[in-house]
Image 1 (cartoon, rainbow, N blue to C red):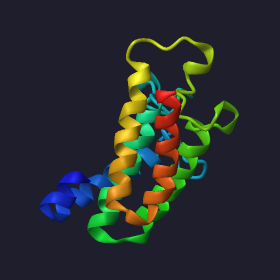
Image 2: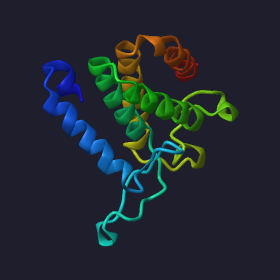
Image 3: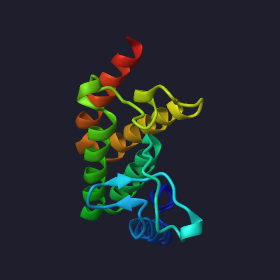
Length: 154
């Protein structure tokens, strides 16, 4: 998706779309609930999915669609961004935890490994990129990122 935006080469749009369609055809991406599962088993031909949800997966999909929307202006990419963004803000910025970003798979239980807290940095980056690529979402995204930064600093 980034390559499409920066090279203006339709081939990269086509490949990004094929990638989306493949994910959407597996249990990894549910386009009704906007849940993105982290992995699957090749032993079952990717017909199952772990129910683990990590922030970085959402960030990658949001930003990918933001690059495509910025380049093409097609409404389907905005629909995807909005669905994924709504799910992201609801799942990973829970109001019952102060509205700051939480790695829901491990932080509430206190069992994150050394890598997992860093996933939130990836989501933060991709949300900031999305806010730049899709200016109409800037205030909405940065309302959450500002609150998160304040929470992290405090």
